[in-house]
Length: 337
Image 1 (cartoon, rainbow, N blue to C red):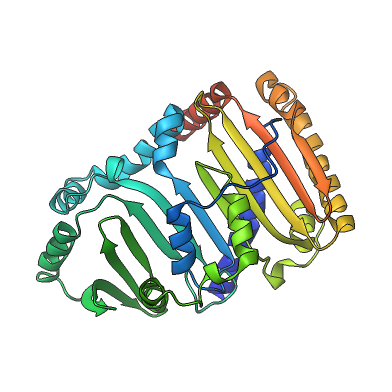
Image 2 (cartoon, rainbow, N blue to C red; image 1 turned 90 degrees about the vertical axis):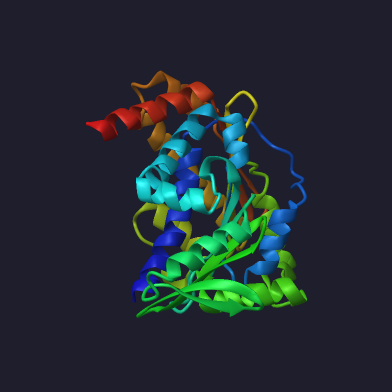
């Protein structure tokens, strides 16, 4: 029951974040031709199961390079994780610098099965020997919560609870993998023997990844909508989710710090896509009225573009770096009250 609720919430959040994030941006169309996949995304598609219905990526390096505002907020989040004396001691012992060593983060897996859990893939620059040595030394002091074992010839660290077992593996100098024991075991097997039982075996899902990967900073691909979401309600977001087949969100920070955004919603036919576009335009109009006294957002929303073509709807846009900074600063001041 809990897993089903989380699956429903995860898929719904995808639509909410995609649409409303883009309703805060404007204009700027991108090329119809999706770029090729990066080597990390290609490998992630091999590691993830064929049944995966959601994949998301954040390129931490890209965000750091092009958005000082977003990078500062990201560093604030890292500070919460690393600044306690105990956490810093562990990180130092493992030769890990969170602000430098983590480069890309992927989350993927199955939303619609209670028995499955997402896989986390962290790409970067790691010292497997230092990490394994430190964890092994810690296990000498406490073996009740974490145990060491081998999966496919690699050292894995496993925790158990009433929902199952979860594993983390330092695969090599550039990849750490974590998730349910079964999914990590299967992912490592696919990595070693190039099995066809992976997301990479589906050209349809790879096409969605290529569409999503227009976003050089962050992207997400929802490859199917859970059946329990396909119930039309009065809420506009419910109406979109109830008829959509799949979707992607792509976000890219440009060199000037502006954020380019693109949302794609796939429908079953052209008529449905046209109806979705109408609902999205209604949401856009509502957003314009809600920010009537905020000229910066009014200017942004005035140039949002929504297009319906065949069985797809796209919404593209761009938000200036100055607006991003204002939004972040406002949230920071509110959270400090």
